[in-house]
Length: 267
Image (cartoon, one colour):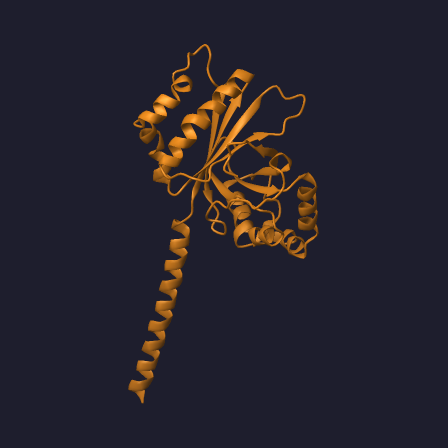
């Protein structure tokens, strides 16, 4: 009888161990399979710079990236106010791994078609640079949204609203808490349920405004955007989430940018 009991307990322990191992493996796989994103922003001060950079992206940069297997590249410009003196071109580039990002420039430097097609931009004189500055932010996708998702929109391209948000936190620990709010706190799931058409959610691992996270949601038009956020604020899930003591005061600054897709953007 004791032998049977011992065998039973041994079998139970093995089953529990196997279950834990599978859970850990799934968690590890999910963690490792997340994408990385570069938000590459060209800051431009003249129409000539806009034209030069547009041409470079269309004729050289994007074709070269796609030849390397980098697809679903978004290219956007901000909806400007009349007081704005600078414009920007924001390129969202998804990478399957950090190594793919690190190896990109070296591979481009060996691509003869890229070098020829982009020669005017790449060899520009220092007195006539094709941009004022380039800003770069590197992000790692959230566990609950590990891959970039192309939005499903049926409205005219010119009416669409792409909303890019950046949430800064006071400390690194508080930033991790805000990321957890999206993942374990199910904020991502709430966005999904309400149809926010999110392109990506990412934790900034290198950038000028750290610690912070960024994400992009998309809408058919401005009216749809406003209605979605109204539904979000009124939802029972959100009211319950913001009432939790552990998630209070985890944003110190928020930036919102409204963008529109260029004609050559993949989405």
